[in-house]
Length: 271
Ligand SMILES: Nc1ncnc2c1ncn2[C@@H]1O[C@H](COP(=O)(O)OP(=O)(O)OP(=O)(O)O)[C@@H](O)[C@H]1O
Image 1 (spheres, helix red, strand yellow):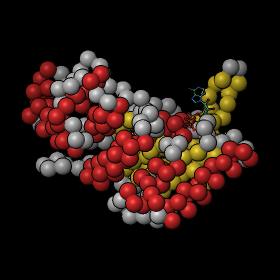
Image 2 (cartoon, helix red, strand yellow):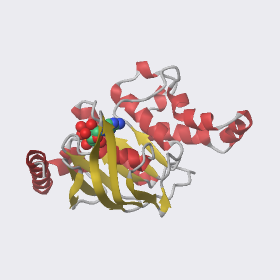
Image 3 (cartoon, rainbow, N blue to C red):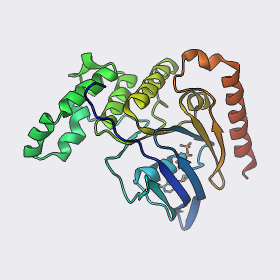
């Protein structure tokens, strides 16, 4: 993106993290003793059987919830709550229906500003960045449209631009394309790879779709349920540029088969 300072990507360290939830009268352990190192600027995808704790782990990294034991640090700093250095994109587009596209993207910046700062915020390039992000997601023509006038894919593109507005050093994505049709999903995957390379963020991306996990990730982290744990970390042997033809290559499909088989084993064995 022209004339924009890039954020410095964050390394994330998860050490001995245990999380329990109260369900009825008992505490249920979602996972215990999770350890994971995520390199600054890397793209990591999280897969695993339903209920193994993928979203919970993402929420802990976001600081939306806290571990019962262990700690998560970003570049050595303990996560103690949400922060502008991290942005989250959810499956269900959380746009404000009463704001148009450009105002949705600018919303969090404007919320943070009082009347005085708002003028400063305009001067310091927020609007320029919002326009640049609009162009990056290919929606400059829709800047004045309202969410109900957009398709699902367009809404999710706006949600991504909004998440990027504060130049997050880490982008946390929880099944962001789960509600999209296959074709739109592929377009969005190319977009997110493009955004990742241009914006220099660390990306942690939860998905049920193994093909998506391999197409996007440099590492695929497979979690297993009962109890939730990290089962296997697959190094994806492809470079940062991922052409569509990769999906039909033998190597890609072998890895996909391996990961899918392992997910099935972990969900059947329960151990
Ligand atoms: N707020 C909560 N209160 C109680 N239990 C919870 C809460 N959030 C998650 N859980 C439980 O924690 C476990 C892990 O849930 P989580 O959503 O993290 O799994 P997941 O791997 O993301 O699942 P899915 O793939 O189905 O989205 C589940 O058993 C779930 O019921």
